[in-house]
Structure formats: structure tokens, C-alpha cells
Image 1 (cartoon, rainbow, N blue to C red):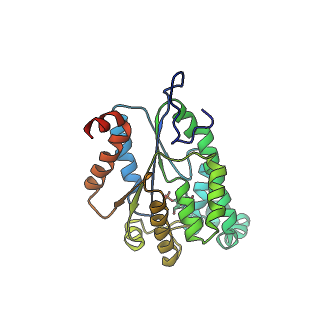
Image 2: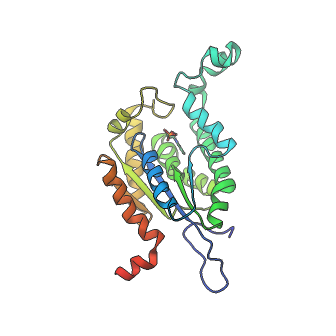
Image 3: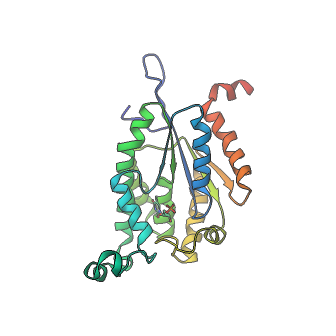
Length: 248
Ligand code: TMP
């Protein structure tokens, strides 16, 4: 199964049927991904084993990267929490972290998550739902930070070993509307300028246009129940392709 990409499912006599389904959620901050990912996991979990993950995180290494994203620039790191000496060394951390170094941090977190949690779950035939995945790096570090898209794609490929989601749900929202929904205490990425978030949103739409079979793009300003119903209608077909085929 090591060559399994998430889309090229093995078939034919003698091939194990234990191949899972990999679903990711993407979108700008405040689009409602976490809420919809949880709702979907609960619904699928009624009939099937589901592993719910988020990025960056889900492994010890991933949580380190998560704390970097959450803390720096948010004011959570203070003299009181880390001590005077460390604080002096860290307070210009934001300015000193090179975009390429940031790209490597997200890639490291993803490589660990894929090998430690995602592949084993898919190999057992489970459904894996991940709140953000490689498209986040393409959108934020590629389009947002304006790194070379080609380099980011290559890095993603190395980190995932070529694993691609079966379905990516893009919850689309204007960055200003999304950011208005997130709590006052913004993290390192949320604190970026409006232009940055516009580029991220446009980047997502471009990525989705380039891979229409994998992406389901939804208007995230609709009521949550409406978004949930649209997601379910697509996921149901993924879970029961034979039934969907019969209806054609
Ligand atoms: P979240 O936990 O609120 O989704 O925050 C994660 C932040 O990290 C979010 O602003 C997007 C950003 N991010 C990247 O810039 N690149 C990545 O590859 C990932 C996974 C997240």
C-alpha cells in the first residue's frame, strides 16, 4: 500500500479492499472549516471509523509547529511565560523567520502526520478528515507569501509522499468576512495584512479551478446547516459510489 496516493485505488483480484477515504477542508481563516469538519466526522462516524485531524498538529512535532503559529505575534509569549532571557531572544522571532523556513515547518509537520497517522488509518480502510492539508501551504506560503508555486508544490509532494485527498472541501469567504468571525486574539497568520489574505483566497480559488474533480467549492457565508447539507450530498456519493452509480 506504500504507493497509494489516495486516488489511485488498487483494484482487481487479490488486492486488499481496505482502502480508506481521505477528505480535507480548506479555506481562509474564519470560513467555518473546523465546525463543518466536526459535523461531518460525527455523521460519518455513525457508520464508519473516522479519524479527525487538523494541521498543523496531530503529532508531537505537529503540535510544536501549531504552538509556533498560535503564539508568535499573538502576545501569548511574554516575559512572564518564558522568562526574561528567552523573551529577549524571541521577541523579534516573527521578523526573523524566513518564509522558506516557515514552509519547511509546515512541511515537517505534514510529513510526520502523513506517516504517523494518515497512511496507517487509510490502510486500515478508515475515513480520514483533515482540517487543512497541503493546499493550505500552496495558498498561504505559495500565494500568500509569494514563494515559488513550483517549489511549494514540490515540497508538498515530498512531505506527503504524493498522497492526495479524495475530496477537498473549499469553504470560500471574503477574507475580511472570515477574519471578522475569528476571536480578537489573532495568531501569526491571521495578523497578516489584508493583501496577504486576498492573495490566499484568490490562490485557493485558482488551485480549486485547476483540480475540479477533487474540489467542492462552497459559499461559506450560507447558513451552517445549508453548507453541511451540500457537503453531505457530495460525501455520500464518495462513501457509497455503487448507490450513486445506480441512480444514474
Ligand atoms: P488554524 O488552526 O486557525 O487553522 O490556524 C492555522 C494557521 O496556519 C492558519 O492561519 C493558516 C496557517 N497555515 C499555513 O500558513 N500553512 C499551512 O500549511 C497550514 C497547514 C496552516
